[in-house]
Length: 484
Image (tube, rainbow, N blue to C red; front, side):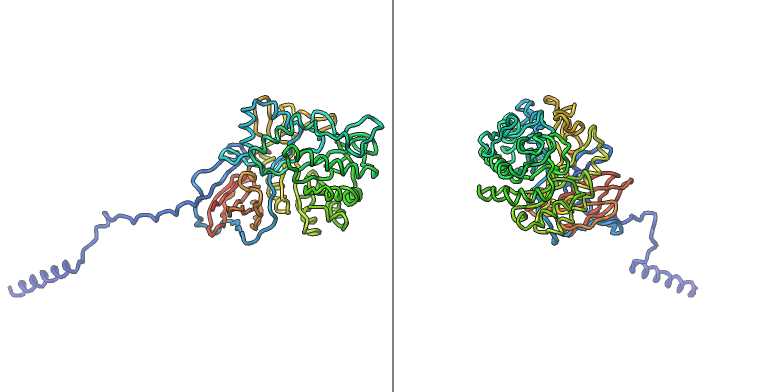
């Protein structure tokens, strides 16, 4: 009995000890999993997307972007400590035909459209630069200059000079635009000198006679002064639109040596004597002839009057422009024209123009990117006899009806947030994800990215001491904005 009693006492003692020490068997059937970690909050980045299938066209995306947890993804790294050229702006050519169609809209509809194009409100795309023709371009109703004379007549003192043809449509529209954006920059480009100054006495083709160099320089002076009297400042002129293409109507052939001679002998001194600060820009033609501007800039007498060189991309590679920068790094580069052929192809146009113009031209030192032709009607009119019959405007205007075409959205991806004065800054290139970055005067960072591949691309963006994750569908374009 004593043995039994002792065993009972020992058992009770152990049970009491175990219970006071908290030794219990767990009931795992009632165990609750720990809560998942809280997701990192999205970074407040404004971004806009255009897709090849047109389901999004410069469409604002809500919610920002998440911080990346996958550092194995391709990463675009933006470095604002390394900067390049300052931007003058993004925009279009306001042809005579464009001004005609805008003028024919009702005043209310035109005002609303111009505010959308040139304003800075949420629904606006903020165009900041325009190119106009000095005289007629091939997208005017008719060919004209500001000093048209009868056969055999001359007017070297410019007594009959008049910008009256521009007062019908172009100047009133420009005044409305400047009321919306007084800081808009305007470049003017001649398609031809007056026919009486030319070797063939015709608006199409021919060359400027050396005997009329001074008269033609005065023609430029008179134009800039007349526009200034209308309250329109011409920031820059190009000496000749497409000087190696005399087949347009109007047009004028001008070799590099002749352009250099005209600038150093007549145009530069005329601007200097008249106290004109308008920039003189040379070439204004394709990237395949970089020897043309380099030859002029090698002329020490001519180069002192020259601000820089302008380019189109109907020939050559956009990367060739850097050759001019390397040869004359103190002179600026401008991209001034590229057309989209009707009826347009949104996917192809978005991809090619973004890669070559928004990204390519700016990465190759251009201070502007301008698409050709702001507006045309459904028949692509007006155009001169021999002018462009297939040039699709950024807008198709039919009375008060407006259709926004590929160039509208392409330029919007840059013009809305890369404001004049913004600096291009460093970012690395990734094969199928070309990109370009800018820093604005306010310190905002803007990154434009194209997915040129045939499949969706997931990638990171490193900027502003953060790495965020995003993706673009095949052929899509994104503009990402870090706002201070």
